[in-house]
Image (cartoon, rainbow, N blue to C red; front, side):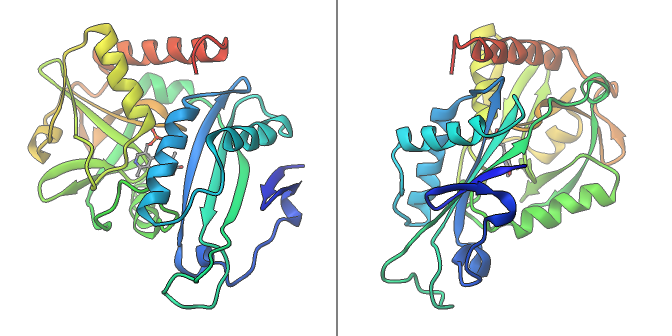
Length: 286
Ligand code: PDD
């Protein structure tokens, strides 16, 4: 049985229901987070809660809980869940109200948390990498907000599935942005390149961890715009997210990336990422 949290109560998933007038349902008027928990220890919870606040500020919705309360709610989900590794999904919408674009005078936000099964990327995917396609980024201009209105991301992600691929890498005006549900890094001349944070991409928590690793390990890296042409003849391309961790893209639009195998810089970063994850699991980092 899966236990979820809805507006003050833990209850079985089957019993959780909301009003059809909820603005999350009618307008996608809400924000969310996915917080990975490994061996029942949350990974970078503070970063996720900071980004949640940024998303709430961006949609002008007051945060219904303090960081300590969010941590306790997430812990409540983990404690009631049978899995040791779990993604805590949390969502806040502007709640129910008359079907009107205008905010209700008094919002009663809907707060929902549920566990998502989290499994480390399968060994063959880590070993061989994954295939991706590119597409033009047709999302709005506030991609820095983790909003539940994900229709553009959903359609873009489905394009990769239809092409038998793992992700859609998004390009805007000739520049690399991110994936439909991940951040994207490239390696050129041995240098890790990361598109800079802006209103056009989500500030990925895993992205930040990868940059911390690059700094700590002394790996050459630069945070700067990456042109489409640089993506297309990169030595390595990676996607990162809280659910995928760090994965090598070894085929892009049917062409091999570099020699078509996960590269040496990827292997170093992945090893450091795994080591860091284990320090979190031992309670030596958060
Ligand atoms: N998505 N960019 C987009 C558009 C994303 O949806 C995600 C993650 C990321 C990576 O962010 P992070 O490293 O903080 O997970 C970047 C989550 C996992 C999801 O929507 O399920």
